[in-house]
Each structure stands twice: as structure tokens, then as C-alpha cells.
Length: 321
Ligand code: TXA
Ligand code: MG
Image (tube, rainbow, N blue to C red):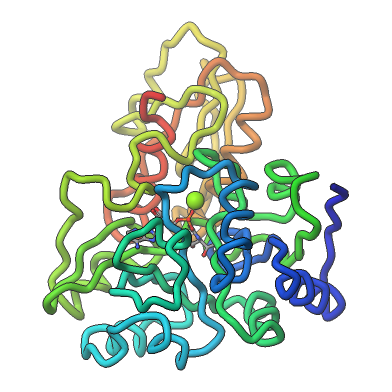
């Protein structure tokens, strides 16, 4: 299949037409690029799993074109905590796991009694949904277990030849995937750390870490993995003292001089700003991964705010495969 990269109003129309035909297309969101298909069409959902080589036990996020869809897809629209989260964070990078209604195909939820829903703030994504008029299921547009794409070129690397269209909306402003929470009995179970921080959520309701059962496969230890082995340090001082024999690249947090034992370096945030670091994270990992290194050595981010989501992605990329 020939993959076209499109943009502008013509691209939006092409994407909506392909969705109507049951095809899957890559669309930009504010977090990462998504691989979208008609959420109410099991055939389109099957195409998403097949294209990503994603195991069927890993459910998809459903993206809503408008708020009235919440009550059609879930039974939680009247829950005051859900209403408060939506008022505060939608449209935006927060995904809610809610009890579902039968309209959602089993394949989309992997047979779970819940469905993950979100509303993207990206103008291009919203324009496509407005023309399509229905919700789309959209996981990150990478092959399963690999780094999420934050630019149209990354999607081409991942899925080129497998999908008809990539809609180019430029680089993603946030750069890490949405926060995933399950509101339950007035509290929030955090299933994936993300751009909406635990501190922000805790201002609304108590936040509990997910249990030890893997409820969101995004929690699988080895995820977000580049091809090159990744070692996560516990401090920046360890990078200065690095004495490894391998041909290693440094994924630095905020420094200007490369420690001499590293053959190359990517700096996530010269300004020491976690938002800047998140926006650069996956592209920097891809660039290091393309250099034929024996090892990528990553400095740890600060373990609060958005740093928690970045630390989570680095841990997963460093986990044994
Ligand atoms: O920012 C994002 O969330 C991006 C953009 C494209 O929207 N999407 C994304 O999708 O990251 P994906 O499929 O790569 O990650 C969705 C996560 C997975 O870890 C999945 O297991 C979890 O959400 N999830 C989906 N439905 C669930 C459910 N019913 N219960 C628990 N976890 C669920
Ligand atoms: Mg993903």
C-alpha cells in the first residue's frame, strides 16, 4: 500500500472519507500521533490491531467528537467526579476508564466491562472528528511495544506501507501519551502517568496507584522500547562518572557539555523545563536509536509533576525485554 502524507483542509476531508470506508488513518493529537478507525465498526477496530501488531488483550482508547457521546458509550456521564474531571481537563490529555454501554464493540475494549474515553484538543484531530461525526478508536500510531510517534515522519517509519494516509499536523505539543485514570467510588485509580499530573488530579479527588495486576497493558514493563538497549541512571552525577566500555549515547536532561566517555548526546531540555523535555523525549530516543549505539544511557528527570510521566516512559524503555 502506498502511504500518503497529507495536510490542510483537503487532508482532513480525505481522512474523514477513509474513516467512513472503514479504513485506518494516522492523525495528530496534542500528545502523540494516533492510528484512528471507526470506533463503532468492529472491522475497523480489527484493522487497527492488525496494523499495529497489537495483541487483542490490549484495549483501545475511544476519542469523542463531542460530549453528548459520553452518555451513549458509558454509564458514567452523570457521575459528579467524572463531570468535574471533564470540566477541568477536557478537551485535553486525560483518558477516563468508565463502565461501558453495549454500543462499543467488544474488540475495542478487549472484552472488558469498561471503555477508555478521551477528547483531544488538537484542532486537526477535532476537524476530522467533526466531519466524520462519530467516535474513533485511536491507540498510538506505532508498532506494538515501540516508541510512540510525535511527528508524521515517525508514523511513516512505523507504519509506512500499511496505512493509506498520515495527516501531518506538525510535531505534537505535549509529546507523551495521555494520563489514564479510572474514577471509582469518589477516588481515582491511576493506570498511566501522563501530562495531567498526580498533583493536579489529587486537587480533585484522592489518587491511588494501580494494583499489581496489569490492568492497562501500557503498564507492561517493557514498552516504549527503542531497538537499542537503554540504561536508566539514578542521578546526573552517574553520567559524569560514567566509565562504561560500550559505545554509548547519553540521553541527558539539562546540561551543555557532553561527558567525554559518551560518543553522542541528546539534551531533553536546555531550559530545565519538563514540558520541553516531554515534547522532545520520543524524537530524541529515535535519533539515538538510529545511530547504531551499543547502549543509550538516560539521566533521570525530576520525580514530580510531568517528570513522573517521563520517568515512567524511561523505566519502561529500560525494562528487560
Ligand atoms: O495520548 C494518548 O492516549 C494516545 C493518543 C493517540 O490519544 N493514545 C494512546 O493509546 O496512547 P494506547 O492504546 O497506546 O494506550 C492506551 C492505554 C493502554 O495502556 C491501554 O491498555 C489502556 O490505555 N486502556 C484502554 N482501555 C482500557 C480499559 N478499558 N481499561 C484499562 N486500561 C485501558
Ligand atoms: Mg501506545
